[in-house]
Image (cartoon, rainbow, N blue to C red; front, top):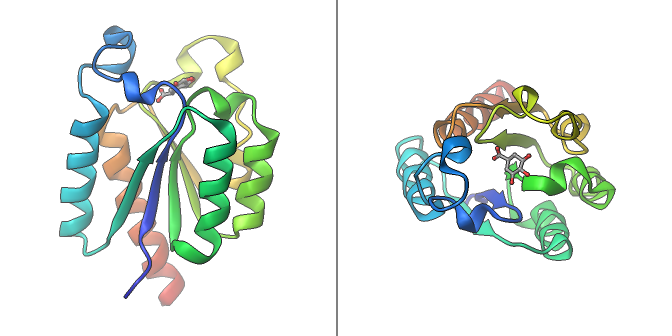
Length: 149
Ligand code: DHK
């Protein structure tokens, strides 16, 4: 069986729908999961969608992608801007990573402009709300297609 794409979500993303709707919109994480699974199904790939508020758990999941996944779509929430441990885990996983954010982090506070994920990722998508996750699925499929050619 082909390995899934891990779709990993970090701290506070469980609060989507209630949390700062002017910034993050009104879709819940369950809504996003549903959209991701539907879109990935159409593209013929399996996903494993998860959320955690804990840095160590996210690091464990990224490490687990080394043998358990074909790639990672990662919205690490605020850990994006703080976690060298996450950066190191991505390097150790040796899998393609696409960084996703719902909001346009570059139009927000300056502390959101730096990412520890981006230098270890193949690309970054931000500012398109939940649609960004679907763009990331398409980008990952394109990445695999190019690699196989
Ligand atoms: C989500 C968060 O929780 C923030 O800490 C990031 C990101 C932005 C998002 O837009 O999805 O800065």
